[in-house]
Figure 1: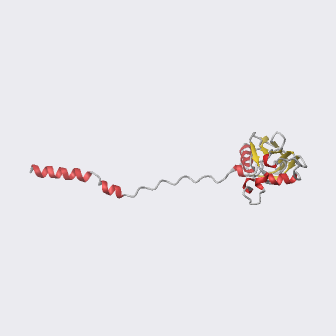
Figure 2: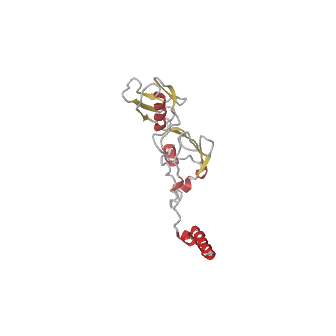
Figure 3: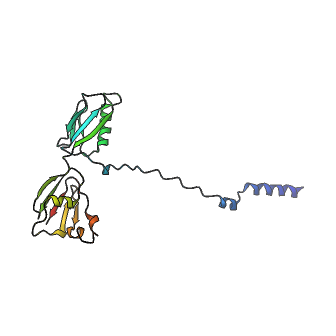
Length: 202
């Protein structure tokens, strides 16, 4: 009788222990998928700058809707909201800021912001070119595009040592000879310019 009780106890203990082989055969749960990254990149959208002209419309409210220039300090003026920062923002970011401001006075405002005229995208070319000066661009432009606006190099231009100076102080070397080489290997180095860039041709 005692042996029977011991045998029952052993069976109960063993049945409570999980089978390690079965556990090993269990498929490992797949890791949870990483949250989808936001594909919206404000850095790829146009950013408003001083002297740009904006169409700001508030639905069903003609008293607030108007076409306004961006002042040199980067702000625009509108009824109710007074001055609001526009320069450095994308149109969608400015729209969100206006909705937040107007919500204090207008229930559920519907706002749209459209860049009517671009005047803030300006770059400069100095040094050994035929036409130095500041150029106002209406869209994306590469270094070669702006050098073409400068009407070519001067007689003593060091074409392999051109430097693009950014507003943040960075200096990017641009080798014209490499970019226009016959094999086209340097074409990918013909990068897009940013507002305020200065091209220096020594």
